[in-house]
Image (tube, rainbow, N blue to C red; front, side, top):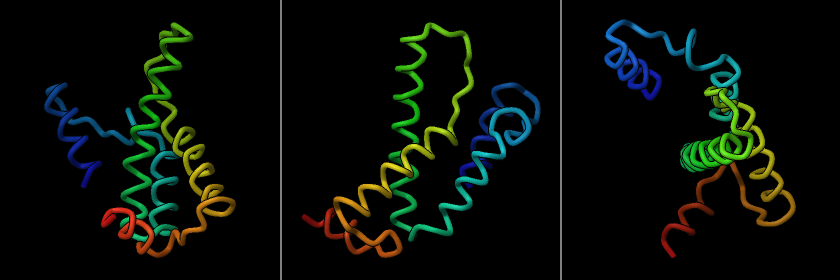
Amino acid sequence: MQFLLVSAYFSLKNRRWVNITAELLGWGDILLLLSIAFYFSVLNFLFFYIISLVVSVIAWLSWKLMSKGKNTQIPLAGFQAICLVVFLMSDWYWLHFNTADDTWLLNLIHK
């Protein structure tokens, strides 16, 4: 659904059909999202996806400001992979929650 909305947005903006998988979004991004969609439960996936997008934009903006580079492409799959490693390490070594079960997230929301 999100890919369709983003495609529609960029198509309207450019006044021509834009295939985001060919021009804006890499196959690494799509394959990473597909693989974690099968790994996480629904709420865990939504939680991870939203947090990783926010962290990715902040990391990219910080990198862009520090490096003063002209590159406008965001390495989304790389940033999300780093977020996934941090998320899983916190699961294994610190918080001990089950990524296949939404209970920990529901308890966090209801507190």
